[in-house]
Amino acid sequence: MNETVITLFGSIDRYWYNKNYLKYFLDKAKGQPVRLKVSSPGGDVAEAVAMASLMADHGNVTVEFISFNASAATILAFGAKSIEMHEDGMWLAHKCSLGIDIWGHLNADQIEDAIKELQNKKKSAEAIDLMIAQKYINRSGKSLKEIITLMEEERWMPATEAKEWGFIDKIIPGAHKKPQVTNEITDCFTALGLPLPVIASEKESEPESGDKNLVSQIIDGIKGLFPTCNKTNISNSNTVISMRKEFTFINQILNCEGIEEKDGNISLTVENLQAINDAVKAANDAKAKAENDLAAANTARETAENSLTAVVNDLDSLSDSVKNAVDNKAKVQVIRDIVGKIPGTGTVSHQEANADNKFADIATDPINSFENE
Image (spheres, rainbow, N blue to C red):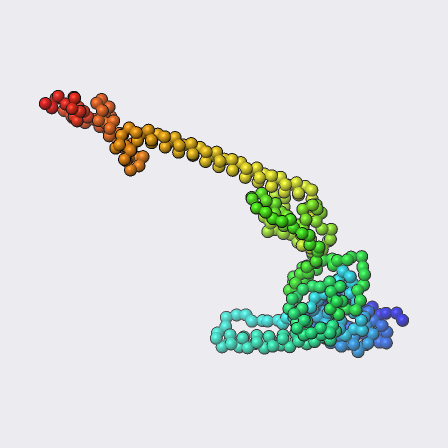
């Protein structure tokens, strides 16, 4: 007997893919096997529960999950006779969410009313979560704690894990071994407030880290962009694609607005690697030059200090008054005072305007003081 195929590709809501939509086709296929192909981000839980009940009443419905299916889409399947999932599909179970519409300037009484409303919403959400959890328990045989923990994690699981949990009966092999996450899927999940899928990849060991200088830090930062440093094409999977604009320095090196990320990995061309290598070399050269310049400056400073020390020592040997001066500036002043007392060495600043004081600079000289006798 041929299967009747029904498709449900989109959100579950009361205006389109709902219990009435499904009932129409199930009624037409009464007494016949039905295959419901589903690819849905979920939607209205009430509609999904009703659709599960309709499938259970029909008694011979196989749900075939294609691509990504979440939330209410998984709940409706529990009314099927058998649940199948494509190898590259993903499954998401999470707690329900309810619409909250509170806005405006509220006084104390209105705030209290809003709090009561939110408390009631919370109780409703908790009741719905328990109802959903019970359906997962009935299907899988897992404990309430295990199911609630899974719902709280809000993570996508591949078909193999969904089968391990007991949520599906069969995995349909396909050409793609991994889920294919397109920009359209990413935008859809973001708009619906669903978490973005994280596709597991093989982890490779990282080399042991030693002392890090400036260049090694730059290199380590670049290594962080991809799992291994010996692969040019980091990933061949055409999955989640996004532009990573936060790597500002790398983007400047590559002269691009952002690095393209696919499924958590970065693909770089040989030209990209050459540009990064040149930038690291330039940083290394600049660092070496800066170190050399600093060493030369330190040497020059040390030479100047040694020369100054030698000069000061020579000056100190001239006189105890010079040696006992508090600092070099005071030493210079002491020397000036001594020089000023030597006949014929008076400077313009020392000379008096009055002609009678013409020889004032030698008045203390006992040999030439005959004019005062």
